Image (cartoon, rainbow, N blue to C red; front, side):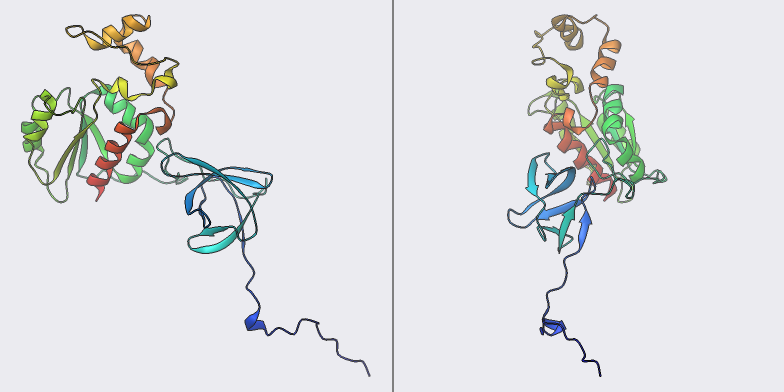
Length: 268
Protein backbone atom coordinates (compact mmCIF):
# COMPACT_ATOMS: atom_id res chain seq x y z
CA UNK A 1 0.00 0.00 0.00
CA UNK A 2 1.14 3.55 -0.77
CA UNK A 3 0.78 6.17 1.94
CA UNK A 4 -1.03 9.38 1.02
CA UNK A 5 1.20 12.43 1.03
CA UNK A 6 0.03 15.48 3.00
CA UNK A 7 1.27 19.03 2.82
CA UNK A 8 3.21 20.31 5.79
CA UNK A 9 0.98 23.42 5.74
CA UNK A 10 -2.15 22.50 7.68
CA UNK A 11 -3.69 26.02 7.51
CA UNK A 12 -7.35 25.80 6.46
CA UNK A 13 -7.94 27.27 2.96
CA UNK A 14 -10.26 29.98 4.29
CA UNK A 15 -7.51 31.26 6.57
CA UNK A 16 -4.84 31.50 3.89
CA UNK A 17 -4.15 35.02 2.59
CA UNK A 18 -5.47 35.66 -0.88
CA UNK A 19 -2.79 36.13 -3.53
CA UNK A 20 -2.18 39.73 -4.54
CA UNK A 21 -2.79 40.22 -8.28
CA UNK A 22 0.00 41.58 -10.44
CA UNK A 23 -0.83 44.47 -12.76
CA UNK A 24 1.39 45.79 -15.54
CA UNK A 25 2.42 49.40 -14.87
CA UNK A 26 1.26 50.68 -18.25
CA UNK A 27 1.52 54.44 -18.85
CA UNK A 28 -1.78 56.10 -17.95
CA UNK A 29 -2.74 53.52 -15.30
CA UNK A 30 -4.07 55.41 -12.26
CA UNK A 31 -3.10 53.95 -8.88
CA UNK A 32 -2.69 55.09 -5.27
CA UNK A 33 0.30 54.57 -2.98
CA UNK A 34 -1.48 53.91 0.35
CA UNK A 35 1.42 54.89 2.57
CA UNK A 36 1.36 58.51 1.38
CA UNK A 37 -2.09 58.71 -0.18
CA UNK A 38 -0.49 59.93 -3.42
CA UNK A 39 -2.73 59.14 -6.39
CA UNK A 40 -1.57 59.52 -9.96
CA UNK A 41 -1.08 58.05 -13.41
CA UNK A 42 1.93 55.99 -14.36
CA UNK A 43 4.25 57.97 -16.61
CA UNK A 44 7.45 55.93 -16.31
CA UNK A 45 8.45 52.45 -15.19
CA UNK A 46 12.09 51.60 -14.56
CA UNK A 47 13.92 48.76 -12.83
CA UNK A 48 12.24 48.49 -9.45
CA UNK A 49 10.52 51.89 -9.46
CA UNK A 50 7.49 53.57 -10.94
CA UNK A 51 6.88 57.30 -11.46
CA UNK A 52 3.37 58.68 -10.90
CA UNK A 53 1.96 62.06 -11.93
CA UNK A 54 -1.02 63.52 -10.09
CA UNK A 55 -3.71 65.82 -11.55
CA UNK A 56 -1.64 68.89 -10.67
CA UNK A 57 1.41 67.67 -12.61
CA UNK A 58 3.43 66.69 -9.52
CA UNK A 59 5.70 63.65 -9.90
CA UNK A 60 6.60 61.04 -7.25
CA UNK A 61 8.80 57.95 -7.58
CA UNK A 62 7.87 54.80 -5.63
CA UNK A 63 9.43 51.33 -5.32
CA UNK A 64 7.37 48.57 -6.90
CA UNK A 65 7.01 46.47 -3.77
CA UNK A 66 4.62 43.50 -3.49
CA UNK A 67 1.13 44.74 -2.64
CA UNK A 68 2.41 48.30 -2.66
CA UNK A 69 -0.44 50.02 -4.52
CA UNK A 70 -4.22 50.33 -4.69
CA UNK A 71 -6.06 50.02 -7.98
CA UNK A 72 -9.74 51.02 -7.69
CA UNK A 73 -9.49 50.18 -3.98
CA UNK A 74 -7.87 46.75 -4.48
CA UNK A 75 -4.34 45.92 -3.33
CA UNK A 76 -2.13 45.10 -6.31
CA UNK A 77 1.52 44.55 -7.13
CA UNK A 78 2.82 46.64 -10.00
CA UNK A 79 5.18 44.92 -12.41
CA UNK A 80 7.05 46.15 -15.45
CA UNK A 81 4.88 45.80 -18.58
CA UNK A 82 5.86 43.22 -21.13
CA UNK A 83 7.30 44.64 -24.37
CA UNK A 84 4.84 42.47 -26.26
CA UNK A 85 1.89 43.37 -24.04
CA UNK A 86 -1.24 45.28 -25.03
CA UNK A 87 -1.02 48.73 -26.56
CA UNK A 88 -0.29 51.36 -23.98
CA UNK A 89 -2.85 54.04 -23.18
CA UNK A 90 -1.60 57.54 -23.85
CA UNK A 91 -2.63 60.95 -22.61
CA UNK A 92 -4.18 63.78 -24.53
CA UNK A 93 -2.52 67.18 -24.62
CA UNK A 94 -4.78 68.28 -21.75
CA UNK A 95 -3.53 65.44 -19.52
CA UNK A 96 -6.65 63.28 -19.82
CA UNK A 97 -6.30 59.57 -20.51
CA UNK A 98 -6.79 59.08 -24.25
CA UNK A 99 -9.56 56.82 -25.54
CA UNK A 100 -8.10 55.02 -28.57
CA UNK A 101 -10.51 54.68 -31.47
CA UNK A 102 -13.16 56.86 -29.87
CA UNK A 103 -15.40 58.66 -32.34
CA UNK A 104 -16.28 62.31 -32.04
CA UNK A 105 -19.62 62.81 -30.34
CA UNK A 106 -22.43 64.56 -32.17
CA UNK A 107 -22.13 68.25 -31.31
CA UNK A 108 -24.04 69.42 -28.26
CA UNK A 109 -26.35 72.40 -28.38
CA UNK A 110 -24.11 74.04 -25.79
CA UNK A 111 -21.07 76.01 -26.92
CA UNK A 112 -17.88 77.60 -25.66
CA UNK A 113 -17.12 81.08 -26.98
CA UNK A 114 -13.64 82.58 -26.92
CA UNK A 115 -12.54 86.07 -27.91
CA UNK A 116 -10.56 85.44 -31.06
CA UNK A 117 -8.97 83.03 -33.49
CA UNK A 118 -5.77 82.69 -31.47
CA UNK A 119 -7.76 81.72 -28.38
CA UNK A 120 -9.70 79.13 -30.37
CA UNK A 121 -6.53 77.65 -31.87
CA UNK A 122 -4.86 77.36 -28.46
CA UNK A 123 -7.90 75.65 -26.94
CA UNK A 124 -8.00 73.26 -29.89
CA UNK A 125 -4.28 72.50 -29.54
CA UNK A 126 -4.59 71.42 -25.90
CA UNK A 127 -8.23 70.35 -25.42
CA UNK A 128 -9.25 69.37 -28.96
CA UNK A 129 -9.37 65.60 -28.33
CA UNK A 130 -11.41 66.07 -25.15
CA UNK A 131 -13.85 68.46 -26.81
CA UNK A 132 -14.52 66.11 -29.72
CA UNK A 133 -15.30 63.23 -27.36
CA UNK A 134 -17.61 65.50 -25.35
CA UNK A 135 -19.21 67.00 -28.47
CA UNK A 136 -18.38 70.59 -27.54
CA UNK A 137 -17.88 73.16 -30.30
CA UNK A 138 -15.65 76.22 -29.73
CA UNK A 139 -16.46 79.44 -31.57
CA UNK A 140 -14.80 82.86 -31.44
CA UNK A 141 -16.34 86.28 -30.97
CA UNK A 142 -13.71 88.77 -32.20
CA UNK A 143 -14.05 90.75 -28.98
CA UNK A 144 -16.53 90.93 -26.12
CA UNK A 145 -18.05 94.40 -26.56
CA UNK A 146 -21.35 92.90 -27.73
CA UNK A 147 -21.29 89.92 -25.37
CA UNK A 148 -24.65 90.59 -23.62
CA UNK A 149 -26.53 90.73 -26.92
CA UNK A 150 -24.66 87.65 -28.19
CA UNK A 151 -25.70 85.72 -25.09
CA UNK A 152 -29.31 86.87 -25.48
CA UNK A 153 -29.26 85.78 -29.12
CA UNK A 154 -27.86 82.36 -28.18
CA UNK A 155 -30.64 81.96 -25.59
CA UNK A 156 -28.84 79.51 -23.28
CA UNK A 157 -30.93 76.98 -21.40
CA UNK A 158 -30.63 73.78 -19.36
CA UNK A 159 -29.91 71.71 -22.48
CA UNK A 160 -27.85 74.37 -24.26
CA UNK A 161 -25.40 75.92 -21.86
CA UNK A 162 -23.00 78.62 -22.93
CA UNK A 163 -19.47 79.11 -21.61
CA UNK A 164 -17.39 82.20 -22.44
CA UNK A 165 -13.63 82.66 -22.01
CA UNK A 166 -12.56 86.30 -21.73
CA UNK A 167 -9.06 87.83 -21.89
CA UNK A 168 -7.91 90.28 -19.19
CA UNK A 169 -10.80 89.54 -16.86
CA UNK A 170 -9.67 91.47 -13.78
CA UNK A 171 -11.82 93.61 -11.44
CA UNK A 172 -12.39 97.09 -12.81
CA UNK A 173 -11.46 96.32 -16.41
CA UNK A 174 -13.79 96.88 -19.35
CA UNK A 175 -14.00 93.11 -19.82
CA UNK A 176 -14.97 92.65 -16.17
CA UNK A 177 -17.82 95.16 -16.43
CA UNK A 178 -19.15 93.48 -19.58
CA UNK A 179 -18.95 90.04 -17.99
CA UNK A 180 -20.88 91.28 -14.94
CA UNK A 181 -23.80 92.22 -17.20
CA UNK A 182 -24.36 88.58 -18.23
CA UNK A 183 -26.84 87.20 -15.71
CA UNK A 184 -28.23 83.99 -17.24
CA UNK A 185 -28.05 80.95 -14.96
CA UNK A 186 -27.17 78.88 -18.02
CA UNK A 187 -24.24 81.05 -19.14
CA UNK A 188 -20.86 81.13 -17.43
CA UNK A 189 -18.31 83.85 -18.17
CA UNK A 190 -14.79 83.24 -16.83
CA UNK A 191 -11.42 84.58 -17.82
CA UNK A 192 -7.71 84.83 -17.25
CA UNK A 193 -5.76 87.90 -16.07
CA UNK A 194 -3.52 88.23 -19.11
CA UNK A 195 -3.77 91.10 -21.60
CA UNK A 196 -3.87 88.57 -24.45
CA UNK A 197 -3.98 84.79 -24.79
CA UNK A 198 -0.31 84.93 -25.86
CA UNK A 199 0.67 85.60 -22.24
CA UNK A 200 -1.06 82.41 -21.10
CA UNK A 201 1.77 80.44 -22.73
CA UNK A 202 4.68 79.91 -20.34
CA UNK A 203 7.76 81.93 -21.41
CA UNK A 204 9.99 78.91 -20.74
CA UNK A 205 8.12 76.95 -23.44
CA UNK A 206 9.18 79.60 -25.96
CA UNK A 207 12.76 79.95 -24.80
CA UNK A 208 12.31 83.46 -23.38
CA UNK A 209 12.81 84.69 -19.83
CA UNK A 210 9.52 86.55 -19.51
CA UNK A 211 6.84 88.31 -21.51
CA UNK A 212 7.99 91.91 -22.06
CA UNK A 213 6.12 94.87 -20.61
CA UNK A 214 4.65 97.05 -23.33
CA UNK A 215 4.04 100.76 -22.54
CA UNK A 216 0.43 101.93 -22.53
CA UNK A 217 -0.70 103.38 -25.82
CA UNK A 218 1.24 100.89 -27.92
CA UNK A 219 -0.31 97.90 -29.66
CA UNK A 220 0.54 95.10 -27.24
CA UNK A 221 1.29 92.35 -29.77
CA UNK A 222 3.40 94.60 -31.96
CA UNK A 223 5.24 95.81 -28.87
CA UNK A 224 5.95 92.23 -27.82
CA UNK A 225 7.40 91.38 -31.24
CA UNK A 226 9.57 94.50 -31.15
CA UNK A 227 10.84 93.83 -27.63
CA UNK A 228 11.70 90.20 -28.41
CA UNK A 229 13.39 91.05 -31.68
CA UNK A 230 10.81 89.15 -33.72
CA UNK A 231 9.53 90.41 -37.09
CA UNK A 232 6.59 92.72 -36.45
CA UNK A 233 4.12 90.32 -37.99
CA UNK A 234 1.61 89.17 -35.40
CA UNK A 235 0.38 86.29 -37.57
CA UNK A 236 3.82 84.68 -37.89
CA UNK A 237 4.57 85.50 -34.24
CA UNK A 238 1.46 83.61 -33.16
CA UNK A 239 2.45 80.58 -35.20
CA UNK A 240 5.82 80.68 -33.48
CA UNK A 241 4.11 80.79 -30.08
CA UNK A 242 1.61 78.06 -30.94
CA UNK A 243 4.38 75.75 -32.13
CA UNK A 244 5.85 75.90 -28.62
CA UNK A 245 2.66 74.50 -27.07
CA UNK A 246 2.58 70.71 -26.91
CA UNK A 247 0.46 70.05 -23.83
CA UNK A 248 -1.16 71.61 -20.78
CA UNK A 249 2.30 71.83 -19.21
CA UNK A 250 3.12 74.71 -21.57
CA UNK A 251 0.23 76.86 -20.28
CA UNK A 252 -0.23 78.92 -17.14
CA UNK A 253 -2.53 77.51 -14.42
CA UNK A 254 -4.76 80.61 -14.59
CA UNK A 255 -5.87 79.53 -18.08
CA UNK A 256 -5.95 75.78 -17.45
CA UNK A 257 -8.41 76.03 -14.59
CA UNK A 258 -10.78 78.32 -16.46
CA UNK A 259 -11.01 76.17 -19.59
CA UNK A 260 -11.59 73.02 -17.52
CA UNK A 261 -14.31 74.91 -15.63
CA UNK A 262 -16.05 75.84 -18.89
CA UNK A 263 -15.92 72.28 -20.24
CA UNK A 264 -17.43 70.97 -17.00
CA UNK A 265 -20.14 73.62 -17.07
CA UNK A 266 -21.18 73.00 -20.68
CA UNK A 267 -21.17 69.19 -20.37
CA UNK A 268 -22.94 68.92 -17.01
